[in-house]
Amino acid sequence: MNKKNRGFSLIELIVVIAIMGLLISVLAPVYTRYIAKSQKAMDVETAKSIYDTVILALNDSDAYEGWLENDRLSAGRATVKDPDGKSYEIRPVAWCRGVQYKNYENSYFKVAHDNSKLQKAFVNELLFYLSQEDAMTGKGYHGNTDYMLNFNYNKDSGNGVPECWIIYRRMDNNKAEIWIGRKQGAVAPKYRLYPNTCDEYS
View 1 (cartoon, helix red, strand yellow):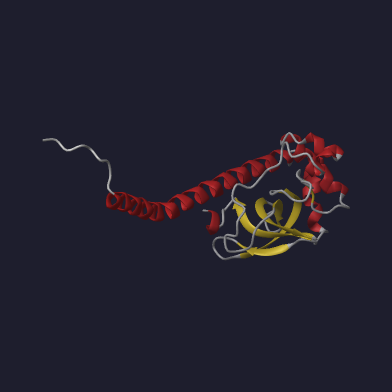
View 2: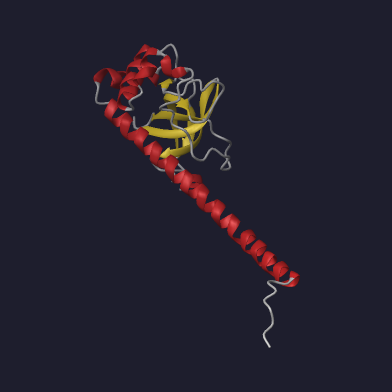
């Protein structure tokens, strides 16, 4: 005589739910770390694109002159360390928001020093190669986020929460570095994304 299928018993359901809960508790941190690593990798790739654009912009003689302008502009300068622990000085040339801020103010790259006409020549060349020409007329600084370079990972990696992209010039070798950092008056670096990506984002 065959018994009718009565489905799962209460005990069996509790066991299944307990097993599912255990699996979720084990896999959730792994998944979260995977997502964070992927987001950081995307941000490093964006930083590389910005770096490549800087190299293109510096082919213009006026832009290159603007690149050298911070020889006499010290605001926002910082002393940082390379992967080997050697200290060197960086000074900002341009920056833009990487996260939503108020009315998306400064969503396009702009000069690090508002009174520098020479840096403006560099930034205009940069904006051209980034297809952000609207910013040359000021339209991009307030409300237009069509070309905003958002961070994918904008959490604290141990050195503070970043809010903007910053293009720095190394004072020892004249080369570009792309950082993310803070804007409180002058810009301040938090994490170097390209080249020589910092350990927190590697």
